[in-house]
Length: 98
Image 1: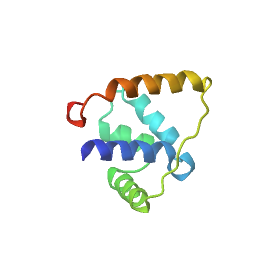
Image 2: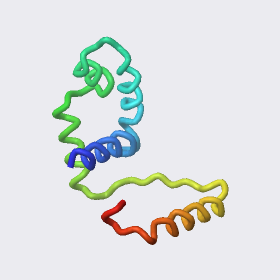
Image 3: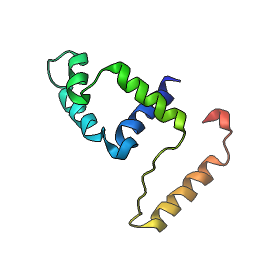
Image 4: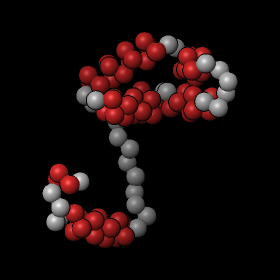
């Protein structure tokens, strides 16, 4: 569960609310090299406390409507070849061995 919640938090911080917290996440990562206590780094970067972010995250998750990133591949045929190659390699293995 921790893994899924961690990715939900990253997704929220990067994409939710028209990417409102994306710059704050960058600031927090930049502060990780400082000598400040983690709570202070968090407060400085996000301009709020843990509880508020947790409430925002829960609200975001419960809406179950997540923004997505769209992009274009510069060379789709190379990607398709790699997908086919890896799919062929995995076709002989069971789900339990993955």
